[in-house]
Amino acid sequence: MYRSEIQELEMSLAKRENLPLIRKYAQEFYKTHSLEDCWQFACESWKSTYFQIQEISVFLCGYIAHQSAAAVLFLKDTVSQHPDWRVQEVLAMAFDAYCKSIGYENSLQIINEWISSDNHNNRRAVTEGLRVWTSRPFFSEHPQIAISILSSLKEDNSLYVRKSVGNALRDISKKHRELIEQELFSWDLSNKKIQQVYKLAHKYLDKLGG
Image (tube, rainbow, N blue to C red; front, side):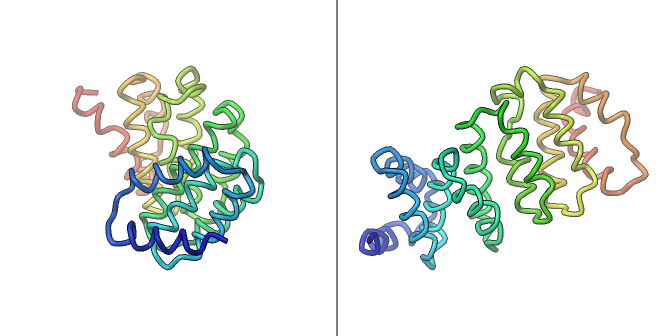
């Protein structure tokens, strides 16, 4: 149904990296089409051999996920398997779009489900997608919940995830220094994985002499 349109997109977008343009296209498509059309276009554009077109699919799934369980599963089980890091960056954005749509206060169950996933891309989609955590509604009023969620991954087996966790905690430390200091003080720094996260999380505090 959308093959000719996808081919045109491949000709216009696949020769360059332009994430804002790709996101804008997905947003406009979402605003002007039905849920069914968005899902169908997402499925068809995912089949493209060009990651730029696949990113449109990921964005669309993020926008419709609050109305489509199939889109949520597609993001979690299919998109997370993609080998290109650029697609994984969009997965993080799509996860945030989903949480925003249902309300961050209502997202705790799906957040916990994803951070418990065996796939490190799912776990990082959460830690990276919601940055800056305490700039998001609900977490801005409940920073300790954000800190607790992130800190639960301080020993994650994936360095990819641990870096994201450390950077996210560092972000929070700019507004909530005492809370981050209290959390980090309880960590076992003899553990090398935890030590790596600690160094990143404490980076801003080091500048302040914390």
